[in-house]
Image (cartoon, rainbow, N blue to C red; front, side):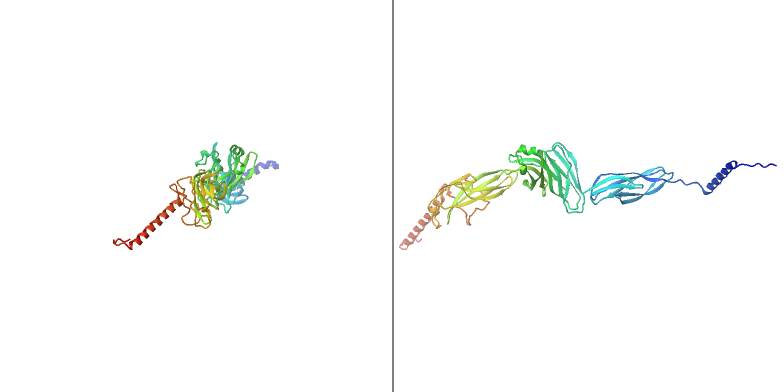
Length: 460
């Protein structure tokens, strides 16, 4: 029998078949092969670009599974390289899920936000002490919402207001005192004061270029503001830049606040002003409007000579209180002066006096307004204090004003007597009364003496 020899190549198919059979037997013995999950972070995003200190921002991670079976993985939420939160995310095979976490920030600054697994960037978040957003704007007004966070500091919040073009008056920065308390304020600017919800002076003594009103949170008070005013406004009103003030609305009246020029530009002037203690402000120049409504003059004898007292009522019809400088003049010479504060839409009575030591006819004036003429005789300027009749005076008003200011150099007692009574000299009336009393006393004495010799029984 002849034996047939085979080459190695002829044996190869048989060997492969044997290997396949062995693998199949091994797989059958081990059971079915398990499918593998494949999970990873496919994306990251955030809801806000700017938040306040003490607030949080929502960060969303998208986790995807491209494997043939479900699985789970750990996801890290990172800010500036520091892990702020971690969670376990389960995803079915061939599916994706989104998970959102709120990351809180207490310290102002800029933070790079990312989600790791592998790391995906969500972008930058700016954490601020305060923010300002324009919520309404038209041709003559702008409303800005100012919000502050709970920042651990006692320093005031200075907020940069949104920029605005083609406005004659604009608030640039707004500063408040809040001291670790979050707050919301609505700051409204009016370039036309007539559109504001408050009444501002509009007479010839006032030039108002803008109005600011503030709705404040409890416990939060404005501190200062910086604003821009067009030079064209100042030129139209004929007002120097240094004369502009911010006026507070206090108890129905306007009061000037400390205001200063911080920058001079070609077409604009930048001002800094105190805004403490009020919620409405007028920007411009407001002056009091004084007038003298009544005057009178009286005199009395004093040891030094003849004291002359002039009294006047000063009225202020302006929208702001002011200081009125009053002078008393005798024959156009200033002999006494004082100052008095007169509130807006109010009046004050001012009293001034002087002592005349020489006889003559004198014209008495109150701030160049003729109050009356007075005549002083030689006997009335005697210094022994015993003689002399009251000088005649001609008051310019028959209804004397109520005295609210003390007379300068005046003494106690009943005060100065009027120069005349019903058109008759006061001293003549007093002298007549004294003479009548003296005559009555003489008659009584004569009757008493005669009664001692009277036998009729009649007795005084």
